[in-house]
Image (cartoon, rainbow, N blue to C red; front, side):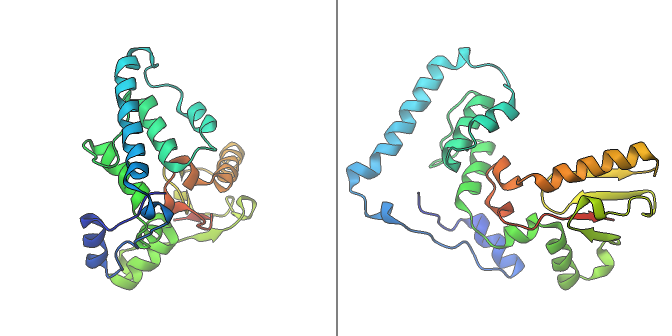
Length: 216
C-alpha cells in the first residue's frame, strides 16, 4: 500500500476546524529498492497507453451496478482506477492527478483525516454543529432508530424527512401515512441499513460507522 501523507487541503481543513491533519502511514513499501519502487509507475503508464489505443471498443457509460459487483473483491486503488476507466474511458493518474475526478479519487485513497468520519455521519455532524455554532441552527430531530421496523411511520408528523444516517442520496420525503407509503418507506429503510456505503465508492470515511434511520 502506498504512503498516506498530508495534503494542503487536508491540513487547511483540519486547522480551520480544530482537528489534527492526516496521519502519515508507512509500511514495507518504503524500504523498496529504486527498481521495485518504479515498476508500478511503469505499469500504470503502460495501462494508460493501452487504454488510449482501445478506448473505442469500451462501452459508453456501462452498467455501474454490474461493474461494482464484479470488482467487489478488488483493492481500493484498482477498484477506483478500473471504475474510472469504464466510465471515462481513460486510465487515471493518482500520482500526478490532473482532472477533477483524479484529484477527488486520489484524495479518497490518501486522506485519513478523522474529521471526515464526523462529516460522513449525519448524527455526529449534528453534534458537531450544536457544539461549535449552536443547536438553534439544526433542523428538529424527530427520532433515531436502529431497525426499520421500529420507526413509527403511522405516528410521525407529516410532512417529514426520513434519512439514513450514513450514506448519500438515501432520503424520503414523507407527505402521507397511507398503507402504500408506509410499505414503500419500510422497504427502502431496510435496504439502506443493509448497505455498506464504504464499499460502494471505497470511501474510507464511511467505514464501520453505525447505520441508523433518522427523521427530521
